[in-house]
Image (spheres, rainbow, N blue to C red):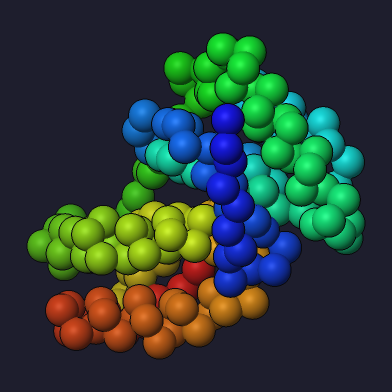
Length: 184
C-alpha cells in the first residue's frame, strides 16, 4: 500500500492520501482520543504520542501534531494508517459522521442562505479539501456568515486571510446581503 503525503498551509497538519476511500460520505473531525472512540482509524492515530487532531475526508486523512517533529511522527502515522487498512476495520462506526450539524438563520433569509450553502459546496469546500480541511456553514445573522473550520483549516495561520480575502469576497460578490464572514 502506497500512502501519499502532502503538506498543507498549516505547518502543524499533514495530509495523508491512502489511495483508498476514507469516508463514503461526509467528514469526521476528532480533536482528542475521547472523541475518536467512534473511529478505529482515529483512535489508532491518537495512540501515537504527539497527535493532536485527526480529520477524515472522502479520500484523505489530515493529522495535526503538537510540538513533536514530523520526521519522528510521520513514519508512525504511515504505519498506523497501513495497519488500519490491513485490519479490515471500518474507518468510523455508522453513527460517527459529523457532517454539518444544525444551522441557524432567520427564515426570511432562506434564499440568501441557500446561495451561501451552494457557493460553499461547489466552490469553497473542494478547494479547502485539497489543503486537507473543510469549511461548513454554521449560521447567518445580521449580515454575518459564521463558518466551522475543520481539519487543516482549524488553527491554520492563513485561515484568517482565506476567510477575509477569499471566502468573504466570493460570498459578497454573489450575495450583497453578506457583510462579513467569521469562523466559529
